[in-house]
Image (cartoon, helix red, strand yellow):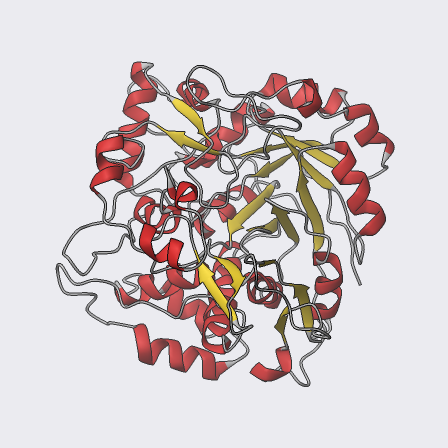
Length: 491
């Protein structure tokens, strides 16, 4: 049975890959707000931490609480290196997400999500959520189930229309099989065989030994929407209950919804958003569900403004992204904070960077693929595959392609060469951001690519004189006007 958790004023943004890690989520949740972990790419995060030796032992400790020990044993056997990788050694890769025959990948995703939520919920009575991208279809059911096994309180999903998620949460809470309709890119001249049912992505907990397990807590579901019309549609047509919304504007970091209407770009090539992209907050309030505003709402004034418009509060990502507890690799974090202090940050809404086709916020940073020479020098490779699209092959089977993979490969799979222009490998770059970057077969090291909201310069307000860092508690103190000495709220 679903129970809506106590409404917090601040939801910490779910920034991937593992920028919103368990440490950050726990720090926020222990202060009575909603801490959120990112579930995107969590299987790779798990196995790379194991290959680096899990020096603090926290990952392995959390794994002992996972209810399916066979998955744990196999993950440790395949990936754990007690002394860590040898210098210069690449990470051992895991199976890429697929629509069929994906039990190993599903097990690792379940385990990774469980570990992250389990650690985020330790030592306090606060609330923890998991953030996923609807567009990253293939791993999502396993990520949801793993998070629920650890008692996650909220599920937040954007970058698409997550209409089938509420029903999946209902079924997974009972350890029943759940499915999502699989989006298939149809190639000209290749069609679905007559009589074939629409393809689905499936997860059956019974396949992993869930028979006899007690029912799970069904988390509250918060779709991330960019319009009141989408919120209204989801409320009416979703296959289960929705407990609220996060309303995200185009100034937010990560993927943004494309502008509504005709595509218009400014002189720098960024998409132009207009009046049709402004959410009618009065109509949001009329839906009768709590909502939080996101996208440049990281200030106490913006929080009060949001509440004045009927919102329960705000979702804030960028301010938390560079705090001490976030998962960003320290040297990368330091470089951005140096830019913030010097007043020379730059964030661009890049319409081409993401292979998904969604606009993507990119922070200008030397040495990252935000620089054209770094981007051009990188040898294209697709070895993680989270953003691949599924297409139908000539034989009726499924193929997988990504607009950031080698151009010849993409074209051979029926793609248009023009679609590859400017596309960047977000999967590998985001792993670099958290210190888990791959060393490729040619010896090259992957480069980072940072994303933040337009309000990145506002971080300067959080850095006290005489120091170059700040904490998650500092962010909450700033937003709420409270003292970090306050303990967790008991709901």
